[in-house]
Length: 104
Image 1 (cartoon, rainbow, N blue to C red):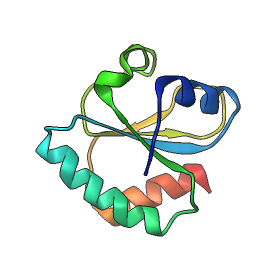
Image 2: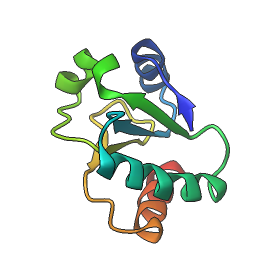
Image 3: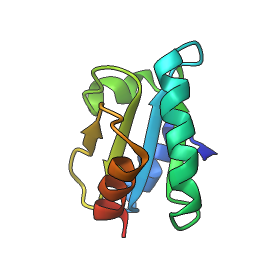
Image 4: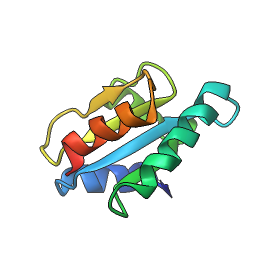
């Protein structure tokens, strides 16, 4: 996954790029489990569509995109609207299908 900055996320969203953003905190055990699932997904997705950001580094986006908790995956479809949020990391297969539905 590619580490994204607040400005980078806003730029990609403004340009209409389709991408998935994993939002986490470093000390969250559930976030580590979700990261492992997303690392598997990453090998099955085109390169450059999966990004990550520490929630403490993107505070203005937390309010703007209404992020309720971590771990979260925000799916940006390329349309200039609020991203779809995934908070339940059910399985690799579920995550992969959700990401592919928006990205590909």
